[in-house]
Length: 130
Image: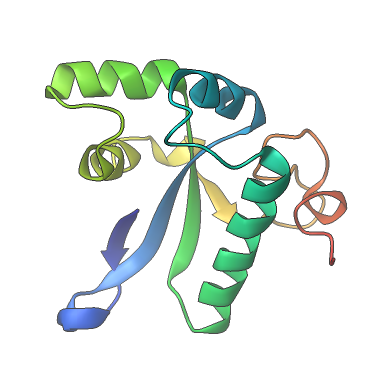
């Protein structure tokens, strides 16, 4: 997770929390390549992420920005950085290189697609009260 500009533990400031995720199509490929890194099914993973973010929001978290990763993009970044895709620090650095226009503010605005990449509106997908 990449954090920017808001006072948090240790007195650092964080404006936003960037959360790197693979949307549904990309996550299937990530799970195929690195099953030990992504053991949860989509049915477990996406609701768990939504719960974590709601909990953070309930505790005055900074703005949460979803960073949709691609397997190819992460592999290229890891190769150029001399690291591995399983390294948490490398994934955090990658999240901070993704252009602003590709980020998804969480929760998404009304009538917009869900952050998970399902193609459904957020309120009909991960934003649906369970």
